[in-house]
Length: 570
Image (cartoon, rainbow, N blue to C red):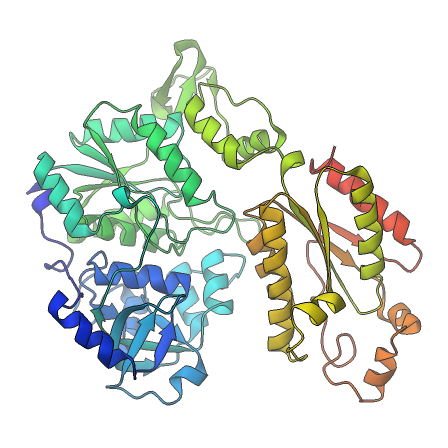
């Protein structure tokens, strides 16, 4: 009945050991092999331990994993659409055997849980991508993460929780499933509509959620994701402050805000069903499913990965088994002559409506343009403007990539001087050779070490960008995936302008000021980019230049014009 219905699978799991056993478990863990969890693994672990992923009590073993991929069920037959797996590298996995216990720690080495291994297996990641995401196109962020970021071995097993991951932010808004169920019970909330979001909410969202709760005769839980979302999304600190402002615009005591430390996969229909059963575990009775729910947009071919109503169709198919009522998204638009939002299907032809897309909102923030009151609440807009100033006040990174001898460093130095002449922001150059000397002197030239060097450059550039400065990077950066990871590090904090210095190999080899090409041709240098190791040409750089017949001054001038055209300098 209402908020007191059973959790998914019949029991709300709590995988934490009793307080009296914590000291003993910690002492035993000192001699165990330790795995430092990635951010996504830590999000998954927290929701496994506190019961949000009930009926799971650990990371999936091979048998459960295979069945989840094949027909969205655990081997017990219970519906479960998403593989929750612990990926580790070959080096860590090599000495492990089924029955061994490992310690799982956060980035600072704090023991979060131990896991007794019941399954060790090597997944077919392309099969997983096709099953979960219905594509192997790695422009899909979930596919990209799976194929390019996860390790090659999966470990399954039951967990013993030692202590929850530490969160220093918004403690008053963080509830585990039992705590939220208890709050509903205390307030007498028996029907609760959950709204999943990873974006700021504006007037249309407020109208949509208010209508959904009213139609369901239920209270409203705004339950935003504050774990991992899609690269480029607004940071959760800004979003939560926006949600707190928004609460004042609902009738008193009808609406609650609580945060969900979920790592999204952006898996469309499967993810919608997963989100629904998670909210069921938190005690909700209804769940809003929007158009293209948890869809990441379009792929390499320009077509959306999922149809606008695919998620709603899958939810309809499994709604009875999930035992949570779907509230389908009704698109609302602003009707100018009535000065209010109305469902689109209630509007007569010819009625003048107004709308601002997400892309248009970002453009207005970027360019410092007006955002009308009919679209969003002034206090929400003010919050967004605090952390999203116009582009001419943001930091940015100019990232040169190209072969050795292509002219990257010379062009970077010319650009630095021009930007310093203009003033307004501090400028830092992160040249490949200089970084090698000061940040990466211990690294060699294997692919692993070259990637690590580029990621270090990206990290420093992201910090410079975050703090309003200009970073100019000039490494070779031969691999597309590594450059993409650097872009993803930087773009949440400001601009990223990739410059492909497309000077032909023969010109670079003629220049050969350091004699490196000659040594590579003679076999004295192995794995040299362009000779015995590939250079992956950027597909969509912001600028491509050939310095064969362009002076550094002209290259720098072209970049300045580009920066002016996109608004980073005035």
